[in-house]
Image (cartoon, rainbow, N blue to C red; front, side, top):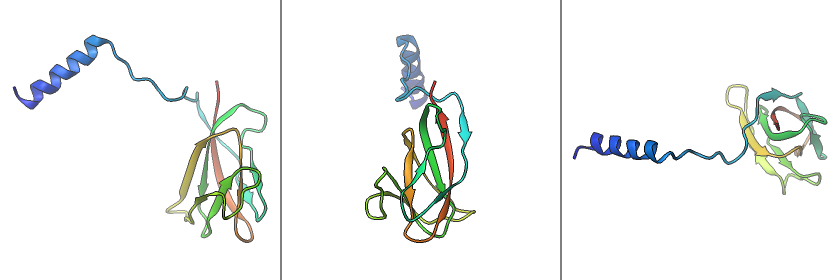
Length: 119
């Protein structure tokens, strides 16, 4: 039996069995663009949807310095690092949460935020 025949047979069995893929999460109806957040040397809240039911957040770093993401007590030693990036090579960190906090080692760094609203 050729590989193509085996593939087609497997495909037919999958269709006849009526199996369907199950998503890990309920998908968001749409993504929204949030305001740019100025992450400082003390934890800065990233609350992209305000009072909306935010489910997922993506934070993008286009700065020459790293941004650290975590809870309200985030530091440069405890946060998840978003490495230094650039306009042509940004670094992005996405996660499921209502909001988060960001910090940097010195000065400030702007982070772009995109988020998904729950249904």
